[in-house]
Structure formats: C-alpha cells, structure tokens
Image 1 (cartoon, one colour):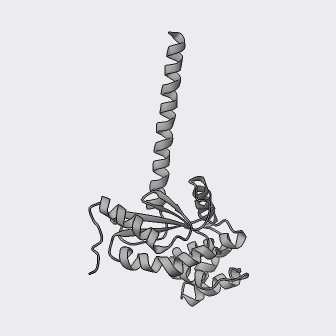
Image 2: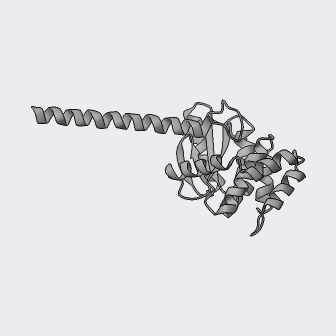
Image 3: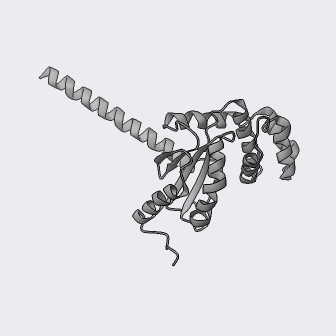
Length: 212
C-alpha cells in the first residue's frame, strides 16, 4: 500500500509539473502573439502569424519579397490575419545590429519602413553602424534619438531574448512561423500559407470569399 501511495504521489506530482509547464508554454506563446513589438493587421483577426526572421537571411528576404505582399493583400488588409515580427538573429553580429536598429526605428513608429529598407539594401557590409544610421536619415527619423538608441544598444536584450525563445520553441531556421501557434519552418510558397490560413478561417467560420 505504501509503495502504491508513493507511486500515486509521484504520478500526481508529474501531472502537476506537466500542467504547470503547459501553462507556462501557453503564457509564452500568448506573449509572442500579443506582447510589445511590431505588428500589422487587425488585433481581432482570427489568424495570427508570428514570423521569426533575420535581416541577413536570404530566404527571409525571399519571403518578404514574394510571399508577404500576397498575404498582406488578401488577408492582412481584409482583417483576416494579424502579422507579428520577432527576431531570430542567428547569422552573426550584423544580424543582431540590424535587429537593434529596427527596434530603434520601432521606437519612432517606423519599424516596417525600416524593415523594408534593410531587406532592400543587403550585402556583406550592409549593416555597418554608418549604413544603419543612413537608413534612419532617409526615412526622416529623429536621427539624434535613433543614433543614441543604436549606440547604446538599448534594444539588444529584446533581440537576443526573442532569438533564444525562438530556438527554444523549435525555430530551427529562418524564416520560421507560428500560425495560430502551429509551427512552419522555411520560406514556403504562398500557396502553403494560403492553404493553412484558409483552413483556420474555415474553422473560425470566417472563410475568405473566393473571387469569381
């Protein structure tokens, strides 16, 4: 009987740990979807896509160039999808610097235009401090505030934390995505996103009407 009771206590303890771990995971995913950071689209959209990206990543650029505009047109602008950007700066110090610079632009409400400039202007020495400050000037940001933010590296912790979290939840490469918390890795064709989104909208009873 004692052995049985010990076994039961152990099982209950394990169950409690599993429940706690599940709750913590749920809180983490909620923070990724709803926590502070750049996003576009309606906060009430039935589908949330969280992208984990690196500004040096060629496949991330491919997604930005070829797939995101189509998702934007069909789903984000129509209130069906909310799109969130998170850092997965895994390709070295320039990736982290670019992430920091993008966050400095975000502080002035210009994350997305800055994001677009980073993906437009790529190359071996694209993300030097000088070039990152030039982008801010081109976008007519407050260059003194931007420079102070970049030089102090104030957003570094956010960039690095998101990278750690991304890896911890299984983002093994860039770009990586959580689509209503389902994981998708790689610059998949638009049709893959479309199929997943349409399925989720159908589940939500808000299927996007097809054009005739």
